[in-house]
Image: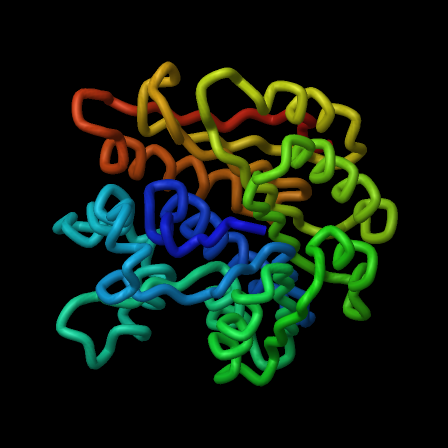
Length: 281
């Protein structure tokens, strides 16, 4: 319960996660039928990169969103995410505010869709409620995100996108994630799942990827390494997508190829991969 995402908002891992989330959300809107967007670990949902001392202290955003904003020709697939940044900062001389995943969900869904954002940290919940206040279709819930996978699934529309993005404070986080996914798929087998994970030295995610081979649904694993694998701290970011929507794998590959050299630390070329753990039938 100590994790506060403001320290890391807008870093390289956030850029990858949010860029992929935006493409997945837009893929969901290509069908007229409404859908549920569920964020299991939402956090505050909106961050002030210029005034929040936590964001200023680490300055991680400079190696993430800061680099992308400096690029003279951003990739067109980033347009929905960049448009969101522009909307948040209309009256700001610089892009001061950075949107988290629940704000992006609320912004990119339609009036008939629903957004449910869950957060357990008692200090983050009021901030999340304020973030979502402008969006009638979005609501914040003070609860454990893994409980939400049982409480809110399946959605009445039978269409949904679920983002599972825990803080990884617990040693059993991977086990909880796999358990939550398997239980959720039993209730809602056709849901689109985005499972985020940090990449660090030691390969702690190996067992997680192996466990996903048991899932009876298409599973695509995406990964971007922006620092050498032996480096201390966060060296990359992973996003595993279960039941990826039509066209998403191709868009994700294009995005990761473009982002990799721009997010890689100095002296490192960076690398990305997209591998089917369980291929589409």
